[in-house]
Image (cartoon, rainbow, N blue to C red; front, side, top):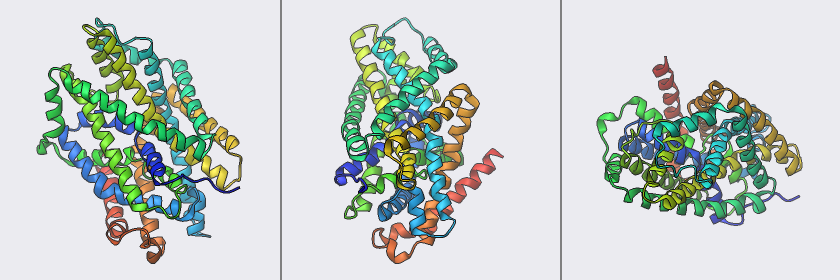
Length: 433
């Protein structure tokens, strides 16, 4: 059977942008901005995304596009009879681990969409503490968490089991544009709130005194997390690109879309946070505790508007979660389909089962959930990216790589990126030591 591919560059960009655009942008980015100094953090994040993440993204995509194979097969083809194939297997395991804990948050987004549909956020008398208690109850109810996680994974299963063209391509062509429209609509509403200007200033006026080693490391880690680098999803999606498609322009457009969405998410959330007089550094619970309180305060004068905005927002959160999680599931499925010659439905069921079991354990144990979150952002993605950079920069033939990757980017991949990532690892160890 012929291997599936994306119809054209537009659908490839939408799929890759959908993979990159996810909870890293809409859930993680705003609270990271709040915790690490606002505009100063954003400035470092943008520089890291442009000068570090773009070369890594293009390197990872090059491996997939040049081989038309998923991670394990790609490394085995480009470096036969070497240990590099185990790097390919590692980047099959990475997205399964990440999807397992990520699906817990995806389940929360599904639960909160259901709450918004049942008008749970229109009680104007509810305090912020009350909304925090609601979120705490959801996290504390392990069986409810597993149920919502299961629903979220089933939605992923439904998309991936249909295949590349009928499932992933159609899904991202519909959801990615809708996601942008929903978030832009929320931005306009957020900016219209009295007191929103303070939130805008927080996002656009950097306080350079807040830039330190910890902020720089956190911003770079967020850029890796946001763009889904180093875990095989970009490689897998690139393997569905047609040979004639331009790799560099596809990568640049994808990164631009991801950066745009992160900034849109910031402007959708932070002005509303400041308008409500809430501390911006509220942490990971920002969108699940603080924003429902903001929606409920709208209900004092406009209950219908409050309900509508809450539904729009949590629909956007769910779409963002799904566009990324589908790519993670596909990275695992592609291994079984390409390497083990397994039927797609069976392969999807196997990866679904692994993610459900491990995800359920993350629901039961907050320690395991926190460990997976730290493991993802501090190690798996940066280590995977290092391996991709070293492989493209040092293992592959320079002449072959330069046929698709421009010399300046190749220079960055060969010399600068490995040193930067190693510096990130060392700095993390020093700071945590």
